[in-house]
Amino acid sequence: MAERVRVRSMMPPGHVRTPAYLRGKVGEIERSLGAFPNPEELAYRQKATARPLYRVRFTMAEVWGAEAENPDDTLDAEIFAHWLIPLDD
Amino acid sequence: MPHDHHDHDDFHHDGMSPSGHPYRADNDTPLTYWQVMEIAIRELLIDKGIATASEIAVQIDTMDARSPADGASVVARAWTDPDFKGRLLQDASAAARELGFDIGALRLIAVENTADIHNVVVCTLCSCYPRNLLGLPPDWYKTRAYRSRVVKEPRRVLAEFGLTLPLSTRVRVHDSTADMRYIVLPARPAGTESLSEEQLAALVTRDSMIGTGLPKSPA
Amino acid sequence: MDAPTVPPMTEETGRRWHDMGGLKAGPLDATQHDFALWEKRVDALMVLCSAKGYFTVDGLRRALEDMGEDAFETMSYYERWVASINNNLLEAGVYTVEELGRRMQEVMARGKTYGEASGG
Image 1 (cartoon, chains in turn green, blue, red):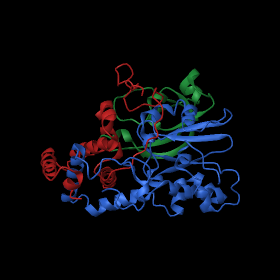
Image 2 (cartoon, helix red, strand yellow):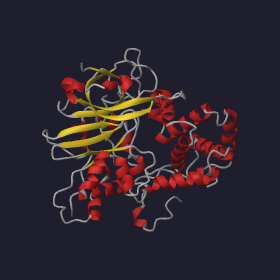
Image 3 (cartoon, chains in turn green, blue, orange):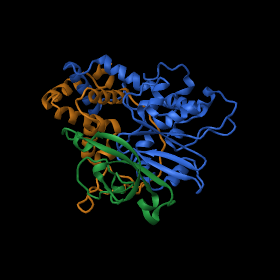
Image 4 (cartoon, helix red, strand yellow):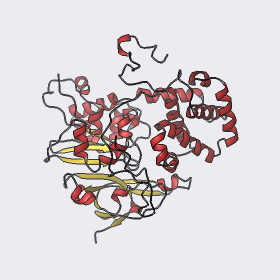
């Protein structure tokens, strides 16, 4: 997984763990957490596949732009790999 | 009566519990539709052999026994034992189990406050909380106000909790979106060099482990 | 108290009501309640049923989310939970709607308080 990632901006209607406020935003992988059963499958009684999960760190400037209280404060969230687009070469 | 077992009458006048909170609708108030559903579901599960009455009672006791005091003892150990602190930051679940806490499947990450960094924890999508260590979350943790605002204006929210941080302090907000739960390791207060581990634990508040407060100062 | 400002799920954004991070909301209210026995029992049923594999916390959350914002505003936390647990147990085939309906009727016939109806 690349160091820098962009969160996918898709907005499916079902149970997902990617908050809307982070979709389309660019962050850095803070740590890799291993693979976990996909909640998007578990929620519907589907057979869940294990998906890699990462902690991604965003700056408040990236998430909120000019509305950020302090641009250098950060926001960390756990995001599954299938929601992340690698940005590094 | 729900408060018969308390000894000191002066603690529960005005319909308040000994902890100073109003009682929820309980055994002696009119039955609600959702209470009826709870009773019916529980009985059906027992009838069908899926759960026993004693299993349910044991689970309630297990959850009742968990409290912020458990987290406080983890924090106090980390303040007094640098090796333990290292293990806590490496794998907080293992560190909590090392102190004898039954945290079930909880996957815990400890995030450390320093002179320059202040951490605060939220679950914007739901109300995820390290309940198997700290017990059930406070009501405010589950509110729209906290969930909506703390990711965007953590400093204003912390100020409403009475905690004003200088701009030089970096705020790190942690949104518990998936399988991890978080506990803040607060910074050890100044002037506590002579305190025992037990005395230190008494300074650690629930809110200081969520990040909406700081530990108490020594008396 | 400010009116709720979280917009409903819209065709323009696809954002759902529970996904509230970053939206405007009123001041913090630190009022705390003690939990009632029936609420602790709901919590215990969730933990036991998920531990035994009848449904997942993800399924619990999916049903809570699908209840919509109105439920969030009008029902208490554990009222929503018991409704979601019921949905999940019905889906899992643990009991039927008819069994639940009959049992609820029996429970209501026992008395007017939780204590009477639950047999303690």
